Length: 233
Length: 280
Image (cartoon, rainbow over all chains, first blue to last red; front, side, top):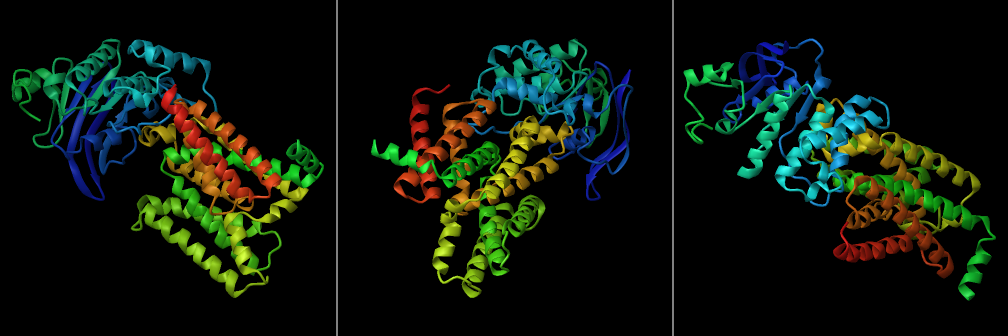
């Protein structure tokens, strides 16, 4: 089942094109790595998918039963103020906000879903801890829970491992891979293709040369990133 | 107990009750938003708006409007919206915009008060507008009702949008991506601050208003680490400080606004000390 399809999508700001016409589609359960040079428009593409950015031309269509509110989003990591008062549970629960509309309070089912998400990613024990005091890796997993809380069909991750040490990065990627095995579609912008190459099913290379296909096709056409540690950024 | 008897004696007068009620309401409203303002780096907005409110008060005085709020409230709300817009995407950036508008309003206000003065004691007028007037001792029942209505509105808005305000404070990008209308809520927050500033100005003086916003939030953040707990604690701290400050001010005839602020400072010091030992 196709969940997302892009036809001749051109992205840019104020008439200046930042990304070549993009053509790709994402099926349910796919794990798509979006790679490319800095400034090639990867993040802009994510913004377009999240409806935060209007494409210059082309179409971006969601499949049946999917719209923007069924996409969970993990934004690029930003420093959290060290004394920001927020417990992990409060942070995770805030993912359900989109489902609330004007309703001022969360439903019991939404709270249960938040607990469920935290159990799934092994951060339930942190629920009462202060978010700001956690390590970078723990913070990212909590934010992944928040993304799951807002939607569990498709996750959009923007460089989730930026600034994490190797161990936390691995743990995070394993968590994402597990979610994928449970049927969640994953779109991830990554600087670190070798690290995720084992997990992904498809690769979209934004910029020159533009490429979209399965990872086998990518390997055949370019090289095997898994064998060249840190070869291509 | 001499002081206690004196205090009980004062409570026979309605103006003391009025002062306490209005003071507690103002403190409550200011501290509710304080946490968000401090965390969103919006603290300066409250400060800037209080200067605007001072300027507006001067305009109202010059125009000899009897009910000054009619002029002060809309003008302050307007500037709140303006400052928020300026803070975002124009050539004049946030801090410069605040400086421009707030100091400008202060200067214009003082100039107006001097040039078109109707009273014989300009310095006294200015001083009371900046640091809280003595007219709070002549609060009428209608003032109290007006404060009650505005406070109810502020508290209602806060409770109704609590979760949105949290999401917005914590991570604006994420909130925007999930379809929360971030600009709208930022605007709402700015308008509510404007209302709080106007509400608080008579009591505590326009220069001291932001103390009510910032101190309780900072105190609560020293001790607690959940958003909800911090918000509740900030409200409690603020109400306690306002009550203690007002009672002290009545008993020892000190200026109300400054006394309440000093109470807040002492509490912050205490909380910082306690926070060192028992961080929960």
